[in-house]
Length: 231
Image 1: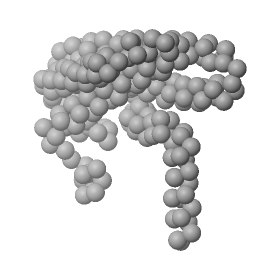
Image 2: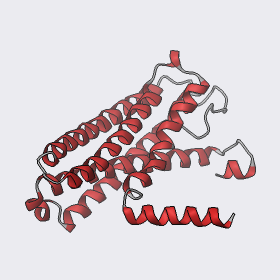
Image 3: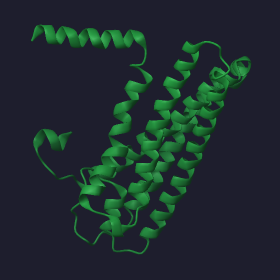
């Protein structure tokens, strides 16, 4: 935002480290919380009689705390490891933000393999969460197909399918950006992939989790029509 407003393309070393830390922290926390939300939906639809015992206030607090703590540790490990590497190939990043693969390109140390190992472990963890989300959605689909009400089935499908689409986009593009071979790397491809996993999913989240509600749809539509009438 600062670079856009002041038309600059520079960032300090500490600013870059802080940007990378908060980027990893919030993206990791978002994904862990999406996984918890999917579990909440699974229990409420497939095991409604056990909802109070499985997802009481204490259990929700513990899961939320675990999500934020895991995200903090993930961001701390990646940031500390990335910025412990000596950089000897200049200081120009071919990206619009401080991204791990772009910083690793500036490293002249073989220890960058340690960071690639961390990325691979994180990718496996993310993939495990994704498998859990898919499994939960499959169980939800099986449950709602037995519901006689067409409105109930539509509500469940309209929630799960967009979430699966956004999570799939986030995972595939994120893993591709961090683990793709350097032989197929190019500035335009790196830029496009980074936008797909860092900008598009957070922008679509309000549409999936909020604007699908009729009251909010009506409010947004009323705001748009009033703006057009003024002009």
